[in-house]
Image 1: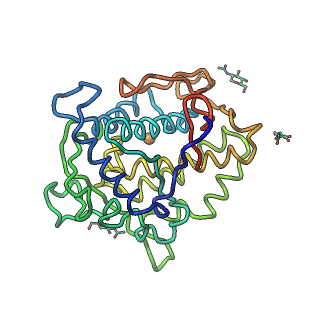
Image 2: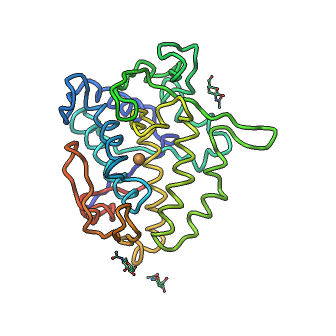
Length: 295
Ligand SMILES: *[C@@H]1O[C@H](CO)[C@@H](O)[C@H](O)[C@H]1NC(C)=O
Ligand SMILES: *[C@@H]1O[C@H](CO)[C@@H](O)[C@H](O)[C@H]1NC(C)=O
Ligand SMILES: *[C@@H]1O[C@H](CO)[C@@H](O)[C@H](O)[C@H]1NC(C)=O
Ligand SMILES: [Cu+2]
């Protein structure tokens, strides 16, 4: 890895970069599924499917593999944008830690050079169970899965309302505030840092965007293209933590797995045919193993 790609914040990307990213994401919906699970799905749907299947019985959440597995998953997505859809850039991230006080005003929700905003009942098409987004280039996106079930629907969001009277920002912003981030970053060992990062802020961002009637809530959350900008940010927080003490932290990987065993760098991460299963070891260093990028 001699010239690592640099992953950018959406807010700092140029219009040309944003446009080409959005075009490549939409292009995934025109490519055949790699999984062959149904004749009606696309490469786009594969990501939601794999994530939903891995919620149980071989979970990739609530245990040490959460961080390297999602790092690998974001890389598989970037690779798909590049190899199948002509994208030439790197993955991008939403810096929600910078936008925590007013997340609904973040540049990622811009139209047309962003991901569109909140869903609404009046945008119709889904009925009351899901809130279709009303604007933006992804308005006509129609993901196939909802949790693990085939349930085609319009892309939906249900931004959690805030409580201005109590100083509570919308979209669960309090869950990724500077106070929360300082707490996460104060842990010096992986087995404390990983669960802190996974619960809040990571979970708060999912809940703040998805709530009950949006795609970011369920296990099929990669249905929402913002998922990958969210997880690139989670990855960036981990990367920065590693960078602060590379000697101790690049390969710091410890904790108890959901099956009761101790996690090891030799653990295999499943990708269910979307990409090869691979070892945790190869995804710890973003400039070594299978990776070549920085933030
Ligand atoms: C998002 O839209 C839903 C449905 O209209 C509404 O209940 C919710 O308050 C909205 N959230 C924000 C933050 O505006
Ligand atoms: C690694 O961590 C140990 C224990 O926390 C500390 O004593 C040591 O200085 C650290 N090494 C580096 C290179 O910072
Ligand atoms: C897991 O590792 C700890 C030390 O970190 C050790 O005490 C424990 O016996 C190990 N458990 C298993 C099941 O190997
Ligand atoms: Cu996940």
